[in-house]
Image (cartoon, rainbow, N blue to C red; front, top):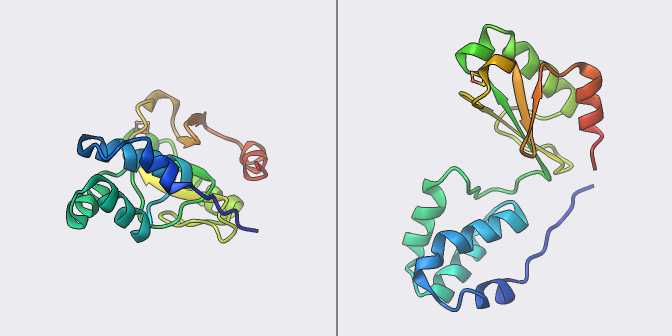
Length: 152
Ligand code: FES
């Protein structure tokens, strides 16, 4: 079952009053609410702020914080950096793929989980480590992963 997040674009854009300097803030706000930016969103931002579409698109594709494809409700990052690699991070990634039913770079069919790999999560001594919705998990067991996978 997929969840659609609706955003009142008129309300959101109205709060920024056409201030061009707020481009990134506007895009971040839409990304936060919808978890992605559609072509229609970029067009609406372009029109509202009076910034050329190509410039809005450039910003939206430049920063990793923005996604131009729909993302899952829960965001998972698995570290494959060197310190985690030597502590069996590839095996952790395999278990996550199996338990959450999503491949790296993809979103599960039910739109619950998006999975990405990163080069370091900044807590190398805890490896192998993953992050889900901003929370770190060090050496998660299968039971812990299954509990996370049943998250609403
Ligand atoms: S290498 Fe994995 S957290 Fe740094």
